[in-house]
Length: 136
View (cartoon, rainbow, N blue to C red):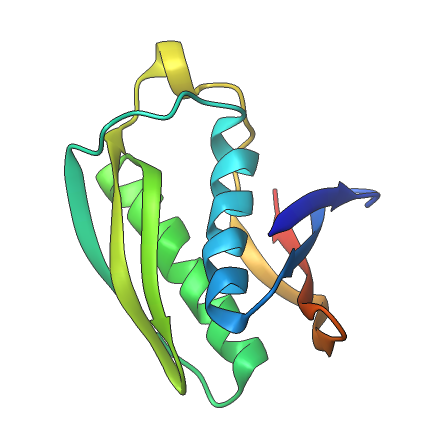
């Protein structure tokens, strides 16, 4: 599993790769968190929240999942430490983390939304690859 930021003129464009679809969803959540909070320490989770998303296809499903995750980060001030998911025709799971602390988690940038523009989710020889834009 790996993600990297790609060049984009105004927003954050990410390339995320994983061996399977569940890992891709988890890794995309980690990419969103790193964008929002920068590099932050791994801590023992103190809070956990359920997450559920649906979509008519995998592209809509991952956008809806990331949008739900963004909402969770923003409304509960959650900095994720562990994302555990089950992915099929829908996605459900638990996001465990700690409450935002400006001293530890203020190294990122604000994300306003998840974009369909330039979205690409493909199966590769080694697993899956996602190209996605986070609106900032």
